[in-house]
Length: 171
Image 1 (cartoon, rainbow, N blue to C red):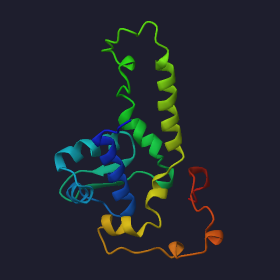
Image 2: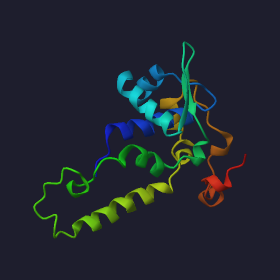
Image 3: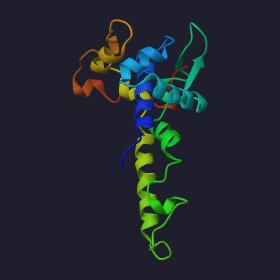
Image 4: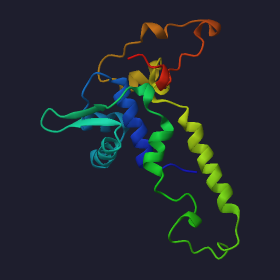
């Protein structure tokens, strides 16, 4: 399975927004940070806005930011938004020319495998990709990188599982 460039750019753009929480980010800055053309990124930003991942602001001082907390944005949800309309195999397409289609049972197994792929990503949240990731912050931060106090080195036993699920998010 290979993800489209749009899906890849969507996740990179959301990571850029998550690292720069509290700031209105500009398309130009995001394009440089995620190594994309502004024109291609504009299409991705438009889709992210339509899907409710980001909020956009037009105009001279415009830009965009996350529409909700990073801990509530599932990677599986993002991938489905960008990939679900694309057939994984020919038999899931309107243009199916496979001579075996009337008798082949492989379609149901491949469909199950694709569903398992998305399901595995449903448990990964944007916050997990960016929190306590100083290398990523150094690459994507529009300001000087700042390592949070909660990211201070700890023993593995003391660290525990710090992931925040949407139901556990403190508002």
